[in-house]
Length: 207
Image (cartoon, rainbow, N blue to C red):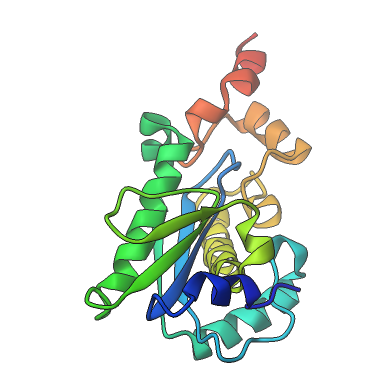
């Protein structure tokens, strides 16, 4: 379980709020990379919050509802496979994170003092920010952001499953499972596949 200790230490009376930012889908072969940014109250916490990857789908859904009901503000950002292929996944991830942060700032927080805690990244935005290695394990707000991003992208995966049947997106969420790689070999890549991630798979198919 992640607690608020790290966030409260970062706050140190210098800032009005702590905002957490995390992403999901960075390693996927298919679909957008998605980021979430959230400001949470730090005078209490939702028990059991931790990195989204450590939670069952049922628990993530319950925690998402709790986070959204308690959040001071939240926002999302996403970048498409086209952008990922053009500028690389790291830069696309940073853009998605930047969009999520700006969405929060635009909700009346531009005149507030906010420290943005970002999971293992920094973003091209003139704001107080700190990259935190393993942030979703040690920062409560980053862990909350990881849950929001995961749930948001999982809903996109259900839409992509309908739009691009045959790849099993709803199951593996676009990651490079054996089933997914075999579907790419059989069907070829869809418009939502990241071509820059498929070089070896497509070389095998063409060979």
